[in-house]
Length: 438
Image 1 (spheres, rainbow, N blue to C red):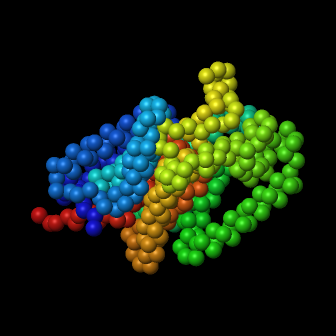
Image 2: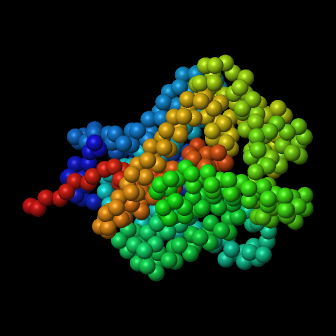
Image 3: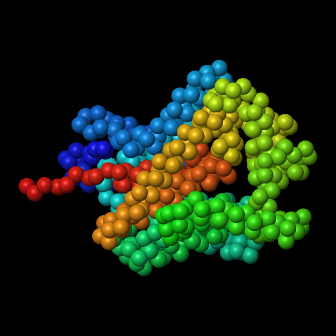
């Protein structure tokens, strides 16, 4: 059973938690990832001090979510003790970062146990980020006529905070006043801005994230979800395969279009050790994963279980330019980080690390699934059920994006989703103290 903060703290209902959520979402666009981690760690230090001087116990539900990360860290640190110090500590940071963010989100709720005010901060923060991204089209209106590749080269690949805000707005579409403390006109305006920001970044991963969010809030994961997932995955893969056959991917014009990128989605992530530079460059994610798996399978049974430890690098087989153009130091043969987060975990922590990570996501998903089944028509319960569906979408999003863009181990992209996961987890598993009349 979880414990609430002492009444003398929760009764004050401080305003800094929702303000901090909003500021952190906006800051994640501008601040270096290391500084953002430091800010989260500082907030956790303050919370630890508060818990130390109170009778409050650590949240057991939160511990179940972060314990797998802690175990991966312990194993990685022990097995990689003789690795390069910088790479060794960098891996520790990559795996610790999701746990820190989950804890930060939980602390925000426990310091101000009001679900609606926190979710409103996520929506407003995501909308501000969306406005920042869309402002580029106001400053350079000619961009709207450019190809998707040109747009991404000019203003970047977009941000995921608007996708989270869009999911929340759809989940509370008919109850934005009670669930998000937003008037209908403002909620609809935020929804439009976030939808535009997600669409105009021309990102296949963003399309997937938004699709998962829509499916979750419409109750797709409420029951019999594994059969539905198999059906959707089959239809999706078949559609992409047919698109790949129908589209001439050799055309330069097609290659610079979003449709062309979609048509190549499967080939880009197909795990294969290509032999020519052109194929490697065009199918980088698949090649990178193939090289990681080659290293993994070359290990002994203990390394299959626990990996090589933190600091281990993957041999690409040839030197590749991985940084910005003109950066001579960007040409590398050995890399410590991969786009495929599951391959990354296999190399660093073995099959055990992958299972531990999935167990954390499964726990979050199950918490959301149980709360989403609340059949009560009471507005409070309806708001909790909507938040539970969002938590399901967050868990599913982290599972999918970890394959494509490192997901939970991405330094910044999934920050909003991890923060929301910690916040909603605390809201669904923690009962705020009742106020007593004086």
